[in-house]
Image 1: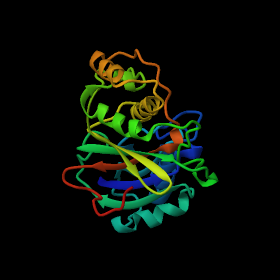
Image 2 (image 1 turned 45 degrees about the horizontal axis):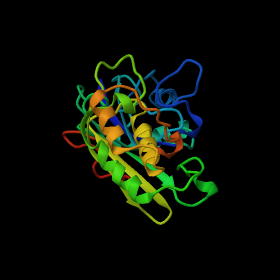
Image 3 (image 1 turned 60 degrees about the horizontal axis):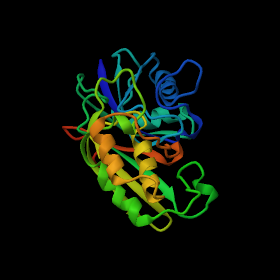
Image 4 (image 1 turned 90 degrees about the vertical axis):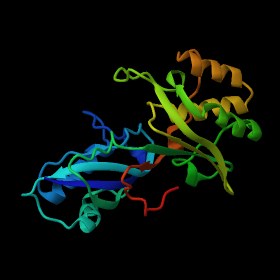
Length: 256
């Protein structure tokens, strides 16, 4: 078997998320179909994270094992070979050989998401950023990002997942960056729970509207219970930006 890692970007607007589903179009299914046609063998891929419906990726990492009797394609030419079988909203950015034991989901050192918020009305952002409908306090929004940094139980700031026995994550970065017409919330952690990024950004916006206090957030993080009612930030603003491994992988690529 030949083990490969792919760096994949996609516009998640028209997909029901990453993970394969029986009655919905997903990124995983579409990518597997294209790879199977390219290599002439049924292939399965494993992603570094399971993005929700409508969520995008700049740096999704996947691994796959290609049988020796499959069509031989040089590693560096895999992205070009697969692209004709992919729709225009999915692209393989790079491909590298990896150890047969490499696992895209279980091996990351950290993952990074970015959430984009538009500060001006634009039709070009409607699928790729959140345009809040109400004014908010910018200084409060920025301050609230610091409340989440650290190792906490993020039960109150994620969706319920019966497959998870622990919701403890180490969030090492949560900061707000400014550009001409956008805000970017950059979040980095060893792992993320389902809906965690969108819930954190939603909580930050509630704080910026004056409807959520630092004390309430701290209490929820300590209690590990879903006692707060937080509106999730819309999915269109969220991107899986980068996934880091040791040894390094795809470090020479551009990210947001």
